[in-house]
Image 1 (cartoon, rainbow, N blue to C red):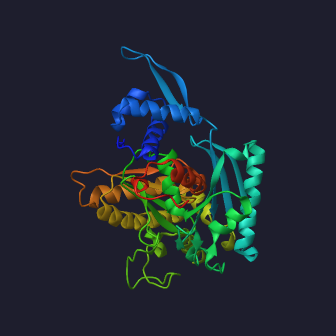
Image 2: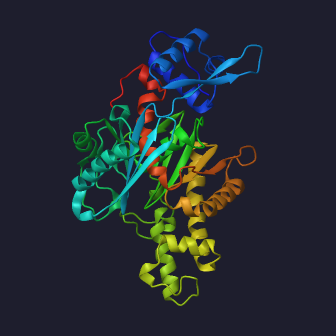
Image 3: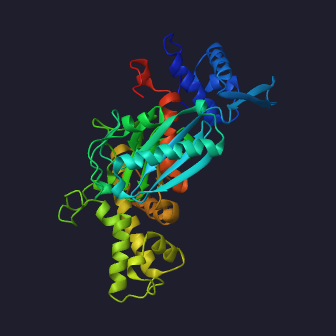
Length: 411
């Protein structure tokens, strides 16, 4: 639990601290908030009064323990909402989520590359309206829309530069933030898909309260969302976390980014499917042998592996071991105690990867003799990217950030 401050000019920061304590505590009293944050009882009472007036929290039951019963505070369900959209190679997926992390609606739209960036943004605008209508949510309670997609990008300006993982799309310097906001009339925040997923895990998942952690996002590509001292780390150009393009072997396979030996060339879903198809074409036996080669995809490979197919499992294990090498390097560099595995691929094959990553960290981590690193699977499953995108909005508005003491958010 992070500490607050009683200085006079930090009302918004302290309110964020208290709201976070209530959200993470899920039934916490004013006294406990003061004890956990270091804020005075009077400061906590004043902030809680404002939160009650704004209908962000509710008083819900009494804790009978102790000499004096304590009223418990919780986030008010349905008090505020955000929509999160994830742009992927095959589809755009959206969720409507409330402040407490409840998903109250889902939409998805297939992506046709020929429609271009503006066509995809049209789809997102239409899906936003559809989500609100189906869930019967008052648009006045919608705070904004978060958008997650592969980089590189300018997070602050919301501009997407030629996304490497969406090769063939011919998107160049697309003003996602400005163009989508113009369609829906709401604030929009844009971020890398892996960073968005990390924010989502911090908001509603197993990383709640974690000061430092990495979220390994494996979907069409591979990236890492990184939290340092309670805040997402984006780097100088807001493109930190390109784990997939960590060089493993300078003489290795050619990557689509133009370099050789990138981690992604050894463990990406594309590489897994390609390797399985090559082995099938060479005559190796598998549960997939009767399937037309061009129909063998990541889902069928994963299903075969989980059904006991040796060939499919070998390729998934190889991918997991190579990914574990990259994660090991990152944990050694950043000194992390928590790694979360998520994304579309991890929602199906996560246990296989978790096992390999844990083995690598337990056997080879520099600090293995006195530090244990927890490896967890994301609670959001296939929704990780979209949930994270929605959480971007919540985090931007409500999360306590020391930077707010010196500057105004650009959201």
